[in-house]
Amino acid sequence: MINMFASESPTVSVAPETLFHVGPIAVTNTHMLGLVGITLILVMFFSIKSQIKKGKRGLFMHAVMWLFESLYDTTTEVIGDRKVAMKVLPLAVTLMFFFLVNNWLGVLPVVGPISYGEYPIFRGFAADMNTTFALAVISMGTAQAWAIKRRGFFGNIKRYISNPFKDPLHAFEGILEIVAEFSRTLALSLRIFGNVFGGEVLLAVIAYLTSYAAVIALPLFYVMELFVGAVQAYVFFMLTVAFISLGLPQPDEHGSEHAVDEKSHSPVPTNT
Image 1 (cartoon, one colour):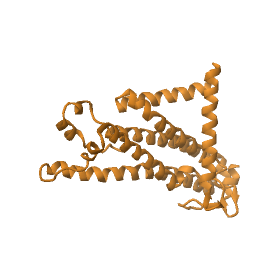
Image 2: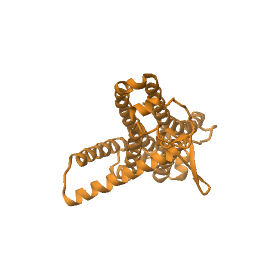
Image 3: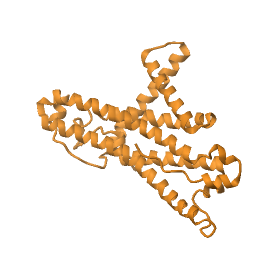
Image 4: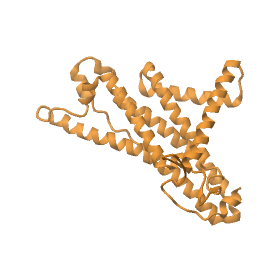
């Protein structure tokens, strides 16, 4: 399979290729691999749920449960409120597993060589900018929803808009905060897209350059891409939780309206 992968000349296409149409809906090669990934995630979660009910304890189940507990502890620590963390956790963990599984599927040797017509059947789901941008919008939309829920609609608006004559500094910070919200959305989507897409291109180029020696050269790069895929999935999870946390009122904001105004502007986190 690796030799077959190496025999294919590398082609770079930023946009996903359309394989066929179902009515007005175009089905791309990213949809095909994404469907496989979603199916694997559902099978994995339902299987683990069944094992827990039956009292079975397998190595894989323990690994998944350990990861889930670690993500729960991280979410609780970042959010600072256990009740809110429990409600944020399902979205954040789902995104983490979604990208983890799909990123790992994207480095398999079957991604690329197997074609339908002139296009490969499979392509990494996160290598589609439509996917990463849509999920980034969902993450940032959730952050805004939580900010409105905890601050109120007008309380959340005060984070961005204030009277420039009474408080010019606060008004200027509000403009920067609006820009930051859009930049966070773009950064969240472009980061994982760039890493996954770049990884696929790297594997294709290395396979083509090494030709039949790809069996020796590629395994090291596969391990590296598996590691990068896991890191990027965790980064997306972590930034989602952090951005939600930034919109929540701080503990000392409950004392007075003045405190709310002082703390309403959240610092832009350092992207990792």
